[in-house]
Length: 320
Image (cartoon, rainbow, N blue to C red; front, side, top):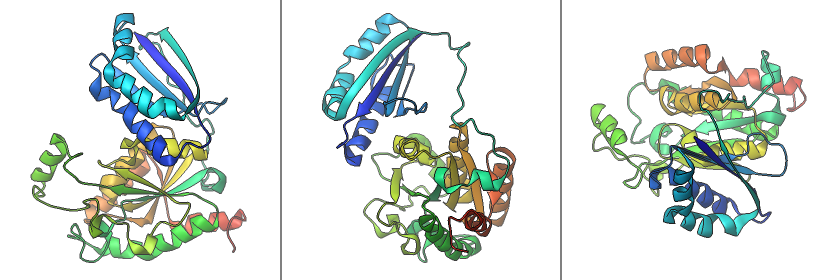
């Protein structure tokens, strides 16, 4: 097999909107070019040297690589979305044995204590889908046991304030349901759970907006998504990479759905995860309990907002 690697450095004036379009355009390759066995584009995870992003295409042989390079979709994305904001790029092609190639861990440090794991200089607070349809009175999905949603609001509000005060980036995910992005498995799942004709978190509606009690402030980041995990939008990993993040504090809804899906993907990408149990909510007590237990067993440390804030205060990041 052949791996086609392109390292790129972006122009200093490249806007977040241009970067988002570039990432989306290049990541559309995996569906547009038949010869691609796999494709990815995201931050340069090695984070050494001058390059911001890495594109990696895996193809069967040299002939497949040439067809990919010459494909009209690839040429158009490169011309319209990539090269206008590239300052520099380097390209390398090499043959490899997928059975022998080892995966390189993203974060090398081994932290077993909460104080080391949540140091503000390498931590971000992730607020998962705290949107009106999910977490506000009258929201389209506000059904079932709402006690966890109601109990989450004040601790989460205080946690967002504490993160900003400690200099910890706040990253929101915002789920969108629309005809452009809904696929067959999504629609089948909705039908299976009685949501075949449900309308919720439709872009542009009030239900799609992030709840007022944790509304994003200047400097916060919002990552739109169309599936459960926030990492299905390449901007998530790219943003965290630019910020030098190693630990993610998880809050939001639903604990057993989009929160856990994002936690799983974060763990697979090499992040430390801490789930704040007083700042996450499911609509069923059993699902809340089982999801927290599952994440604590496999993918994350489970803690509380008070414990993290107390740790930050002891480290001098917050006033006592």
